[in-house]
Length: 398
Length: 206
Image (cartoon, rainbow over all chains, first blue to last red; front, side, top):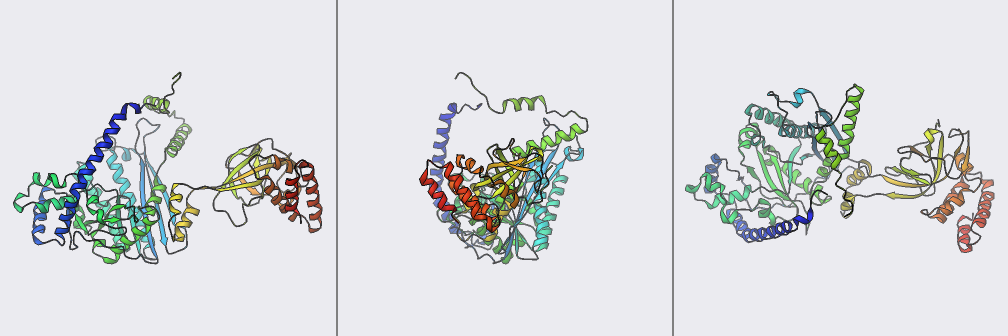
């Protein structure tokens, strides 16, 4: 064993103490923050003006909608018959120490036809990329992981769109991703033309989903966002105090708090009010295509075991009560059987994930293909060394 | 090479000379059942290992365990777990005989009672035995000794069920004769355990 656990005893104890202290501090701040949320209620013109003043500073807050910010909406009844569709993806990144340079994306999907006594249909669609154009950028550098992630994200949404087009005519349908719908590509890629192209391809799939008649939602488990916390902080600033530094420093009342703590008052099945994500990407790329991303929080748990999810939906779902209620009802119904996280997402992940054993088997397939071409495949010496030592050290005489 | 048209009811997971375990998905109402006679190819198809099903285990996993407490479970969730997810049903088989010599599963070759020279191999197809195979395999009652000595199988139950099933495969006029013969063999094997013998004889009495 390389990790000497006995050397970490003190640090682990300190970590536990630190976490307990932080939670105590946050618990002290929480009632005040929740009180601020209740005090806002339905947003007035003054707060709207503050939001408008904050946006030019790339403020990462939550833009309120017509719903009272402290509202809690109980789950509507799920239709007797509806389709719940999910897709999830996993990948093997290129490994320059492996037997060959390639990457792989595997998309798992499931169509759950609630109200029909039939097994869901499921699929697992792997694709391997090995051409130079797949692996290298124009400057000759190896394609970075963020672009492979973007390709996976696009394929997940494209799979949802394909399935929604096939299923949505038969019954009300909701298509669900295990991820937010708002991509954060611009934080990791410098090439503006490439960013535009990636967003455009992604939004094309949202166009198809809208045209299919289905609703779509991106689900984030255990959300760490503090968008609504930033709104509360903004509300406490005077109009004249709205500056970049003042917006960034959440101060002693809100620092460390998250939206999921604020919305801890939601009872099982309830959703929060809708908010608009204030991300610049939302405004630059999504809004012109009428896909502005809204979000709400949902307690998908059960009495005694809360499970808060952040749910992102495009504008055409947010403003359509039938589609919004379907998203709400279906996520609650689906989470009831899988302990607070939608069943279809658990299954889509199961269908997508590439296990260590599967990866090893795939590498052996590649090795066989190379040998049949009279090549002599070999992993790098570094990878060989890791293979020799990765099983853990054995000690003798101790 | 054995050619057998009987339906495959599962595929082999692991094996030993004394028995094997095969996996299958959702059980059909009639197969596999406790006490059924099944066979698996061995020695690259030159022979079949005949055995008795003595245990059927339906495996679970953390996902299934989590779901069992959910009230009013939609049928689609149940069907998804049963039909789509790869959680096999494990069926344990006690080896009791094998084809001796080059035969084919339907007519040629003789069935020898006892443990096979080689166990079947992973992913081999498991099929139910034909009526002829059951009759031939149980004709000498030698398999009863193997069952009685099996450490893991519920021997008495397995003997009672398999004898009744083997009797039912014979012509009506032969059934009583067959069961009397089985009773005599059991009396010989269990001569020092009369309570057990009495219980078994009561179970197989027509």
